[in-house]
Length: 481
Ligand SMILES: Cc1cc2nc3c(=O)[nH]c(=O)nc-3n(C[C@H](O)[C@H](O)[C@H](O)COP(=O)(O)OP(=O)(O)OC[C@H]3O[C@@H](n4cnc5c(N)ncnc54)[C@H](O)[C@@H]3O)c2cc1C
Image (cartoon, rainbow, N blue to C red; front, side):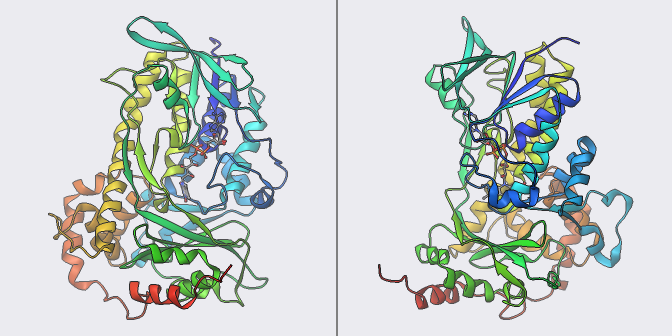
């Protein structure tokens, strides 16, 4: 077997997935991670114990959708099994399909619930146990070393570390996350890179983790997509966690300044209690908060095309995870792509160890159409929802809406009424089908349209209006300093 030196920048989910894939195929791989080494003995305690300054969203709610679970089942079933033994749990959406009509093709309609540090700890443990992997912690990659080749694309030769060390590499994988500085460093060095597609999410979210008190269980909840939904001014949801934890998330428009009061405990708590689907979760007898309220904003949908005019811009360099594509986190597609593409890239590098051009083309062919669809679908959803929140009437060719508005307002509510609609909509939500697939399913679309007259009317008082949320914010003014 030809020996190929692979260096991965970042030991987050994407870096860990590709590292695991390569090592299990007999390839040596070095992961360079700027954060310090973390204790791996206690996955449930990682939420409190892990220091991850390199990942701002480390303690924020994450769900592992069907696509992430499928990738783990296929490529690292031992990791999934260990997670379930340690307190993660599977939310079998199939059991909630209309009249329990789940079929054998629905086996991936299952989410896995755990907190992100728990998941990362379990994945890191599996990677640590691979003898062919070396994780170099506390070390930042400052840039790449390149072999210039006249007017042709340069070829990667290694990575430069902060300490002015160079680590030689035949293949470098940038899994440095949404803020990765590698592309900018290349552009500063005059290397032409493909232009990124970027759109703001227009949403800021407020969230808090809770733990169930002893002797009680999660309250019953309705629907197949989990407790939550989109109201005239908020996206609201429960993210379940491992070991009896869960988080409440309220996402609101970045343009309504008064909603920033949701960062205050009394405002957040009262606002959550006005959502009928969420209120039982935060009842004092059921759960206690285990974190303060955290706000997370400046969210963007970003897609970096992997090829420039059909050619790899730097031979031997691949972008993975959030460094490749990231989308509105409220839809939980980030880990799906980071983990699934991580395993795929491992296979591709293993199949073409010395042909870096073939690696780039195979990875782009396997992923770029879908990744761009994810970007476009959620950018459209964000644009559409922001307009709706701003009071603009819906418009577009899909029952008077954009396709994103049609999915949100017409198809998702119909999930409760029809098995085939449920299956198609849920497969999209869990990214088991590419986002544009639903648009091609004419019989499903016709069924959704036919079901509109049967949709249950929203029950009065189920969610607070924008005025009610503003009134709550005004009633709890910030304490004078
Ligand atoms: C608020 C929020 C909530 C989310 N919720 C979900 C969810 O529910 N479900 C879901 O699927 N996805 C979710 N996502 C998306 C998910 O978190 C990302 O897709 C995932 O983190 C991508 O993993 P990654 O490994 O690419 O990047 P990261 O997790 O950001 O990891 C990058 C790693 O690289 C290291 N690094 C960076 N630069 C360097 C360098 N120069 N040298 C060395 N190391 C470096 C960092 O320290 C870090 O460890 C959410 C995202 C956010 C922001």
